[in-house]
Length: 432
Image 1 (cartoon, rainbow, N blue to C red):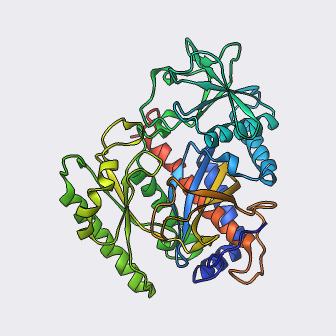
Image 2 (tube, rainbow, N blue to C red):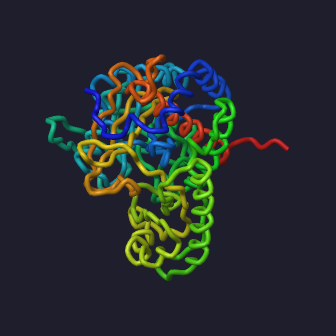
Image 3 (cartoon, rainbow, N blue to C red):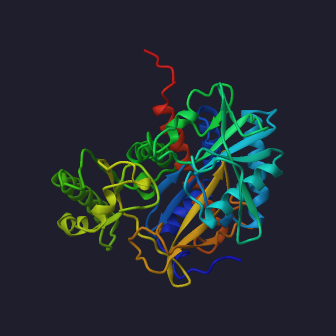
């Protein structure tokens, strides 16, 4: 079933789609050469916005959940990609341990873990869920509404190895974003593969650093394609040392917002875009969209801070006050599903796009964050593969072509994450 959209397959984005489809051999070769120099992440997901005149990533998740929203038709792609990745990392791998989030017991998240287990089992691995939560002191089975169940087992640490009782894994996969910091039990593991590395966690990662890497990737890709990289890149700035509880540093924030809006207005004028520009203000690290603000004018900040500012005062888990924020060019969404605004989310295993879904929210506007309570999900129509576009089709008339374009943007963001992790690797060798 191909989702029906009111506006998704029309508009100026068609010119970009045509350029990407026409350049497919050059694009695939470009990616191939990049992966010879850089290591793809084991898995990732990317939130994408299509404004009708611009297509850009707005968030890149290195510990993706939501695997339960992928269709059955996508599973063979996921299994093949897992096999290819495992063969590179640890060809003799037999056992894999997934470490989930500590406190997330929502049925949707547990269903995502069950789907990951299923994918990895079909790829030829024994898979267990090892919790580092202090609340899990013995094997705990949780029933899901679907009739499935998941078994959470307490992690056991022995010298330099991690596992669960009677289970010694070759590879440990984190599905925990480490917002609360890196627990000691995960440190100094040298005899097992830990994916992603610890410095991919939100206690270290910075969204501004990621989009700095993405800008580098987008410029190189844009030059190869002969396009303005702004068409696929959201402008951004970073404000540091803020205190949302005491409201200090707000002048600096307002200055950054005003400067970025001015840059966006300049680009809108260049392209004859009549829409009113806006920016998104959000914590520079952390997930779950808490306290995300849509700002159309720096003068609006005072009123917004009275509401969203309280949420920005703390990241998820109430771990620490937010002092750094990213101010990101807002990319409105021109996509609709069932009369609700929607945005595509693309899922990747290794360097392969394996599927995705549309996140939609009936209570949100085209310029608001959709990753919020009340959102729902409809799988993207990848009946065969995101790598199977239809050359020769009129721009905007082919869902596979549009999905291929989403996959290209998703892979660019994932490549940027590889750049980012290489640049922030604490164990990287430094050459004078």
